Length: 107
Image (cartoon, rainbow, N blue to C red; front, side, top):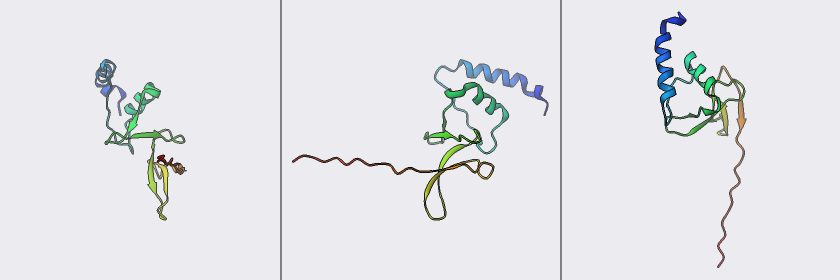
C-alpha cells in the first residue's frame, strides 16, 4: 500500500481528533485493527479507554498489547479472563473470588 495515498485523509482526521473537546469514539475490529488506529492509540497512551459497544471498560492485554482481556468460560464452566486476540495471543488470568461483605442490622 502506498503510504502517501491516504496522507491527506489522515491529516484531516487527525485535525478533527485534536479539535474534539469532549472525546472521540473510534470503532474498530479488534481482531484486525488498522495501522492508523494502532498509531493513534500509541500516541494517546493512557488517554485511551477500551470498551465494549455497551460501554463496559476493557483492560488491555499486558502480553500482546493489542488485545483486551475479556471474560470467558472454559469447558468446565470456570470463568477466567483471556485475551480477545486468541489464538494469536494465549494470555489468560484466573478470576479472583470477590469477597462479599454482609450487612448486619442491629435490632
